[in-house]
Structure formats: C-alpha cells, structure tokens
Length: 393
Image (cartoon, rainbow, N blue to C red; front, side):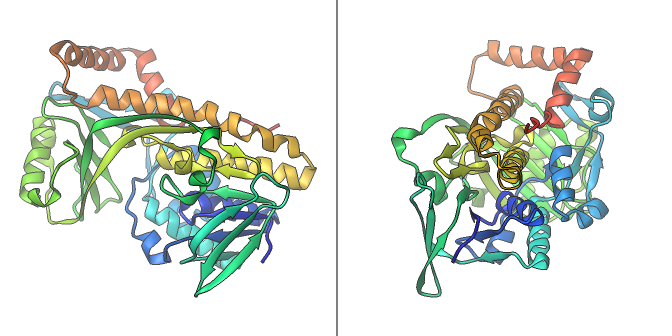
C-alpha cells in the first residue's frame, strides 16, 4: 500500500489534517488503533477558537457546527462572591469562541472524510514506524490478522500523548518539559440547562469550579479534586452540593441539577516535547504537548499544529518548497509555549494550592488587578480567543 502522507491517529487532529490535505489533492491514509465507536466515545471539552472554526470550514466539515454551535462573546471569572465578565468580542476587535463538543467535531470530520472517499483504517493493531530518517519511511500494522506495509513520503503522528509516534523517536533526540499538578478535575455531564449563557471559571477557598456547556440543554460542570479521589464516593447529590458551595450565592441558586450521564476525573499536566520533527516524522497535537484544560487550549493547540503542517505540506507538494518542512517545529513551538503559558497562568490563578496565606492573597490580588484593568482584561481576552496563526511564507 502506498500514500503520500500516512497519518497515525483518527482523533480530531488526524482527521482534520487528512481532510485538508485530501481537498488539496494530497493522498493520505489514516491509521487508528481503535474502532470508530470507541473514538467517538471520548468525551472532551469543546471551546473552539476562531482559527479552529475557520479550519473546520475550510475542511468542509462545519455545517452542523454552524447550525448547532453556540457562539460566545465572553466568559466570566467568579471570585470573592461576585462575577466579572471578560468581553471577548469587545476587547479583541470582534473575535469570539464557539462552544461545540469535541465528540461532535470528530463525528463531523469522520463523515466528511467518508463522503470524500478518503481511506481510514480502524482497528489497526501493532502499528510500527520505520525509516523515518530516510527518504522512504514506512508504517507497518496488522489488520484482520494480516501484516500490511504502508509506504509514504511523510508520517504525521496525531495519536496523542500515549501513542506510538512519540515513542518511536530515539529518546536521546527528545527534550521533555513537564509540570504535573497536584489535583485533577472531577467532571459531570448532565442533561440540564446551563446555569449561565457563558462559561464561569470560579476561584473559591474550597477549590476551583467551572460551569461549562455542550448545548442549551446539556451542561458540563467541574470541580477541583485530589488526584486520588474515588469517583464512586461522589454520587450526584454530593457533587451538586459541592459545586454550589464554590459558586456565588445567586449563581448557585439558579443552578438546575439532575442525574449525571457521565462522570470522570482527569489529572492536569503541562507537557512539551521538543522538537516536533524527526526526519520525515511530524508530531502533531497531544503527541507533542499537553496543557491543563483551564485555558481551553488543548484541541485548539492541536488545530494550530494542523494549520502549520497542512500549509507546509501543501507548499511542499504544490510549489516545490521542501525547505518549509524544516520550519514546522520552530513555527509550532512559538505558539505552543505562549498557549502553555496562558494555560499554566489560568491554572495557577484559579486553583487552590497547598500553599501559604501569602500565595492565596497573591491570587486575589491578581484577580482584582486583571479584572479592574482594561489592559488586564484585554490580555486575558486575546489569549482566550487564540493568538494569531503564523503565516507560512
């Protein structure tokens, strides 16, 4: 089997890259270890930057998002018993974010790829990368009991933090930067109307809380919890009670509760692997970096990698510009580190750490300063809507 770009992983980044390249006449094959149903069963956040929205439109996979997604002009920070709104649209010259679940993004991209007739192979086991430093890289995998060899020009590793792509890189060629946070997010999904039209990020002495949403009838709520939390010890009544205790009183009074349809706990970490190119292997998204979800950057950061790789690949094939491939890592990392900074800062600002009283007072001072300063609000807004993509010249 032969293709131009072999894409490892059928999550949103792999599917988006594959769709964009396919529409430019660049042949791709996507390999995914899991089944389509398993991939669609991953429940993830869904706050999309304008750049991500624009890429989905360019990929011809935005019809349902444009109909059903919720455009948000702002969000709120809750602390000291009050709520302060960050006017994203007003502070950034008209930029907004779109609330649309990652599961739905994945579904839309799967359907768009199937409609185009592009090849995706699911339940491909024992995926192995070969000769990535040569001009003839290969990927082998097992499908239906048979070993298959896929010859290609390039490999895009879009298979996440635990995937085979980064693990295939010689460890002495990787530089890892990491911070693991001493808490996680206990999250609940419920078919209840959101407590507010926009997201609320809450700083409270009992810990962080987030009021989010998937639609006008489905809500997603989170509370900060210890890493060793036993999820079975948290029935719905206990969760709703704790969430209410961390919100301003008037917000808690408006909260509509109901049975949870999904409950999970996720650890928080900041992680970057440098570089992101190894011969003809390119790491994309979570394969190269992880951010804590506080800044809503995970999927969006993967989309910005896709934007860069898509454009350098397109110019390589259509304009004979192979030198641009060598710039992929440095271009991506410039934006990645800025997003890592914002996500780390939001996490540090809003969560309760086991620190001293001085640190807690500093948190309050930061919140007061940034929300009472036009420059502070603008700094938050321009990072939240997403920093500009770097032009590929």
